[in-house]
Image 1 (cartoon, rainbow, N blue to C red):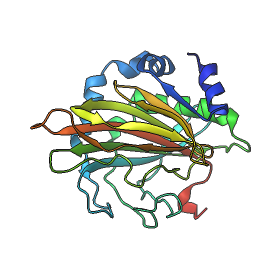
Image 2: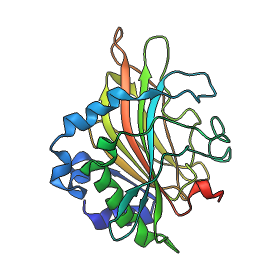
Image 3: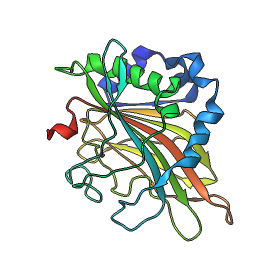
Amino acid sequence: MSFSDIVADLRDPGFHHALPEETDTLLDPRALKDWDAYADSWNDLGLDRFMADGGRYRRRRFAAFSATADGVVERKPHQPHYQSRDYNSLNGGVQRWFEPITPMIAEHPLTQGLIRQGVALFHPLTPDAPAAWHVEAHQFRIEADEGQLGQPTPEGAHRDGVDWVIVMLVERRNVASGVTDIFAPDGTRLGAFVLERPRDAVFLDDHRVLHGVTAIRPLESGAPARRDVLVVTFRREDPSSGA
């Protein structure tokens, strides 16, 4: 698959599932040299204390950026993550303050490269594309054990309330299920697949498709399960502006 193939899939049907080899071609080779250290940072995420279902299965860090089509990426001051209840019926409607992504991860060539390549893909496809995109990055870990399922998307199939989304797998350990489902707005299933290997990824047009991930559980009993992903969203308006 080439860059143009991803663009074609984003036009129709509105998503593209990329295998690691394809994701890697979008990134500078320097981004992959210290992959193990990059992935290890998911071992230092704080508990998500905003889960309205009372679950303690999600850990995360968060950062916001400004990114332009000419490749300039700048981190914004730390801020809350906000979604309206229209897009997140479970946890929406409140400002959620998460621990910030560390400078090492925010400035890492992989994070920066994924943001730049996202803008390169999405900017030409966006009517009235902005001078600068509001970009949010989320490090997520979903955990499960024999006493608790892990819910990657406890709100079910949903939109994020942005323009574009990238979800990249970092690690999947002792996990059963965790199927990514893509739906049209009328509920028609457009695709179902598992992000299995590091840097498996999916690129989404958040206006045209809904996405969700089934609950995870341990593949082998007696050991915990975990699913680590990086989610990067791109939005024309800064949500802090009240738009």
